[in-house]
Image 1 (tube, helix red, strand yellow):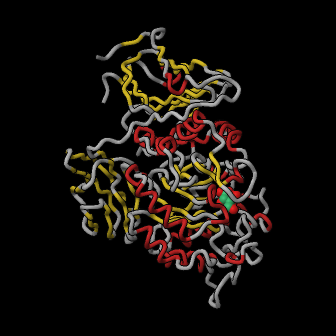
Image 2: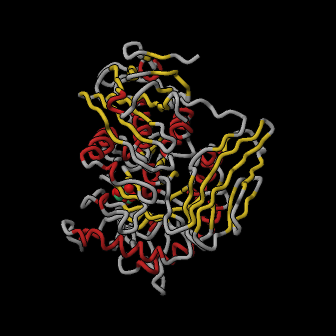
Image 3: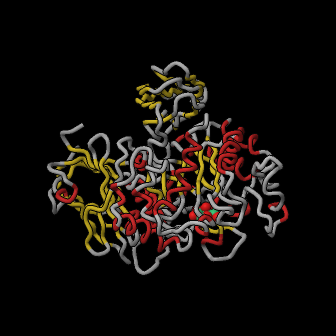
Length: 518
Ligand code: GLA
C-alpha cells in the first residue's frame, strides 16, 4: 500500500550503504545492492540510436533473461535486418529519417517490448557511450588477445545485455621506437606512410571483426601530435591516412588525445586548441563509416563550450582521474562540474566526459604507484557507488576501465544496474546538476524524459549523516512516488522532502515520479 509521509516522517534509513559509516576510512562491506536480473526477458540500455545515411549499421538489442531468446522489431525500416536469435540489427539506411520501432524479446518466461527510436542523420552518440577501455588496467601491456578477451567477457558477464557496446583500445597499440619492450618497437609507418600497429596487434581488421561478430563495436586511440601520451606513434601530418586506416581496420570510435601536440600549439589560444579536432572531425565526417569522436584534452580552454562545435561527441572535462582516484572523484567529478556549470553543455551528440569508471581491478600503477601488476580500485565500496551514481546523473559516458575478465559480483552490480543505466541513457539527454549543498552534503538532480527526476543524496563528509532532498530544491510540488534505484525498489509516496542516512562518501540514488503523473 502507498503511504504519504510528512516531511518529518519521511526518514528512511537505507541501512546497507549506511551501516558502514564510521570515520575516517572504515573497512566497508562490499554490499551488492543491485538485484540479479530475473529469468524473464527485459529490454535495457538506450532508447534511441543515431546513425548516418549509408553507414554500416550495428546495434544489438540489450536484453536480460533466460536464453534462448527470440528477438523481434516492429516497423524496422527497409535496409535494416534483424538476427532474431541474437538481437543484432545490421544493414544500412539510405537516407535521413526518424524511425520509431518496437523491440521485442521473448523467452520461455514471457515477452518484453519497448519502443526505440532510430535517428538517421548527421548526429551520432545520442546517448552517452557505454563500453570498456583498456587504459587503466592494461596501460602499455595491451594486446590483441586482451581486446578479444574483453569482447568475450562483455558478452559472458552479461554487460552487453545492459547496453555496453564499445570495446576500446587506448594508447600503446602503435609503435614506440624506443620502447623498453622490443615487441612494441619497429617501423612507425610503412612505405606508403600508413601507420603500423606493433607486434601485439598482428591483425587489426581480424580483431575488429572478432569484436563485431559478438555484436559489439571497436574503438581506437591516437593523438594529434607526433607522439601519444605514452610516446607511441601518433597522427601529426598523417591525419587523413590514419583515419582511412582506422576505417579499413573497422573501428567505430576514436579517442583523440592532446599529448605532444601541446609542443606546437599555444594552449592559451582557442584556435590552436580547436584546430586538430576540427581537422580530424572533418576527415571522420567524410568516411563511409560512423566513428564516434572522443576529445581528450583534459578540459583545456573550457572545451565544453566548443567541443561539440568542433565535431566532438564527448570531451574530457578534466585531467586523468587515475592519478589519485579518490581525490579526483570529488574534485573533478563534483567540483569541476559544478564550478563550470557543465550541465549546460552536455546533451545528445556531445557529452561531458569526466573519465572512465575506475572500479574493480585496476593497474597497480594507479593504486599503489607500482608498475606491472593489478590491484583493487582504491575507492571504498561507498565511493564506488558515488562514482557510478554521479556519472549517471551527469550523463557521462559509462566506460569501465578495470579488468573486465575479472568481475566480482560487487563490481558487476555497480556496472549492471538497469535503473541507474536508465538514468544515464535517458533519451532527453539533459545532464543533472547540484541543487543543494549543506557543508559536505549535496543533493543532485537530473530531469528525465518522462517527467520524473533522478536524485542523488551524497555525503562527502567523514561520517554517516542524514541528507534531505527538499521538493523546493528539486522544483517539485505534491506527493511523489519514490524508487530506490540501486536496490530497484519502490519506497512509497513522500511529500515535501525525502531524507535518508547516507554513509561516509556514499550516496542514496532515488527517482521521483509525481503521484498523479505518468
Ligand atoms: C592520457 C589520457 C589517458 C590515457 C593516456 C594514455 O593521459 O588522458 O586517458 O589515454 O593518455 O597514454
